[in-house]
Length: 354
View 1 (cartoon, rainbow, N blue to C red):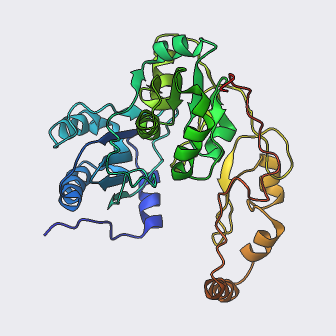
View 2 (cartoon, helix red, strand yellow):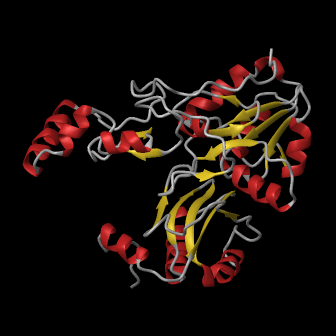
View 3 (cartoon, rainbow, N blue to C red):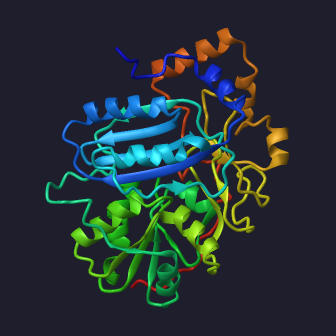
């Protein structure tokens, strides 16, 4: 019987990955389609991808698949053929990372989830596959040149903070499920205007555009393949790049540079910086922006309290952890309202949506 999950220590696997001599390619893909038996689909996919030496994180649900993976470069074509021969995955667009050192993942995790993107939607009549018109990079540039077009960023606050499209509107929230009703409310006076939605790789704006159409919007578009595919196509076709700054990604890189602009600021000193990091105190692990100077000064931590905790003995940390569990205190926090974020960048003024 084959093993359907990893059994080796994560750090051991990371060191093994770092010692690899063959380069890897980082890829993301998704598709909304009905999967009758997600667990069986998951198990079969794990067996196939594990044999190909694939690392990464994949979510399977009745509504489809969402994946961020890396594969040895010599196995890329085999991976494409394998996916083409897998039920529901033929003809997938594979978004290849813009900046890639191939060190983004070191273990394969394939998980069954209620949804591939948590959305809070419980309307049985909603269909995520009925999204807006897909725009190529060239079509996106053309449509967004129209002053009546509204460009909406469907990513989280910490993604928007370090990079976004010119004149994009932020839907300020901590989660996608919060964003959907907020977007409808923010855009309620623009039901007949062209609305273009975008995200990292397309999966969130696919659902968001369908959500707007479901709520009576009439002229909804989405950027095909998201920021990743847009950047690749714009560079290939020598189009003007309308994205400013850095594209946040959900792997060890935490971002890939699109333009040279640094539009965010260090959350500790306020100097220009767009380097995301996780607090070195694992009990906190706060995601925040920290410049090189503050990283040295603060030992990679988000606060003086976390520096102190970082230097506690194992016994002292265990006692503090038990105390937190007893009081249900959660140290981890990515909230846009976290007190460490006084230097969040201001939104570039978008078009009038009233």
